[in-house]
Amino acid sequence: MQRRILAIVLTFEIAAGTLILTGCATPDARISQHPEMYHTLSQTDQALVSQGQIRPGMTMDAVWLAWGAPDQKIPGNARGRAIETWVYVRYATPPSYGGPYYYGPFDWSYIPPKFVYPSKGVTFSNGRVVFFRHLPSPPPL
Image (cartoon, rainbow, N blue to C red):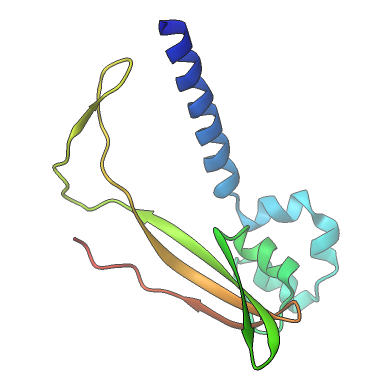
């Protein structure tokens, strides 16, 4: 029974670690993994992407290189044209949360709550950026 629990916990930890490592990749890491995508960009866009910045008119590939994969893709329609909005989220923990303790398979562990909020978004039309915005962090609870 303990082996089964240990196997489940290890599987979960490996999956979570992989998600964290790939989710936190930097523009440099994405560029080095896809140099062919990077070299199709103009020099101006290459400079912006290297700094993790975007601009109106950029392609979806350029935004992916600069900001990474979005947490959500929302299809839509504006003025009769198909659009797609990418949303990026952050996770925040309140600074002074005195929440419950969780009894894990190995010891008592404190697990503070995480709150999800959108941090930035970008909207594309015809595969090009038409609007983007960095959203403010929510106020502390």
